Length: 224
Image (tube, helix red, strand yellow):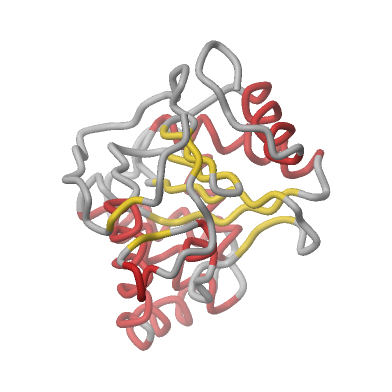
């Protein structure tokens, strides 16, 4: 099934929890539409955000956009899956969109990761947050994990303050995109315009990438 471009603010999100992808969840988004001129959102709009760093190859033909929360258990389970695919495939690039839906601690963790980007530590902080067992329950946890990632904490505090408006603007844009895509929770992935709400096994992700490269539509059933 092909899903057309979605009107902005098309649905109210149910922010209760994480989930896994199910058969038939992968839908196409027509790419290249201008959200500003049409009120619609396309894949090119999702990746055109200088405030969010890319990970992986700069010479990619597949871009995975992932909407994640650092306190989402399914997001943590997907992290090694995405990492393994990115490391094995030199033509895959990943763009994580911090979408903190699990409360104030998640919001502060997302701000910390984005602030760490100003000293080139976004990926390190993202990874240590995702690899932490269980939930991040306090700002003290956030600081401890950021230190573990090798962050200059004095500069981090300065960047959190000086760049607060820009950081909050990134999170606001991510939230608007999630609403426009009618996402129901984290994780959710958009792969070259194909929407997959939920986690998935590595083989499923690899199969999606293979079909994307041959421009085959994704289909319902037990496989992409």
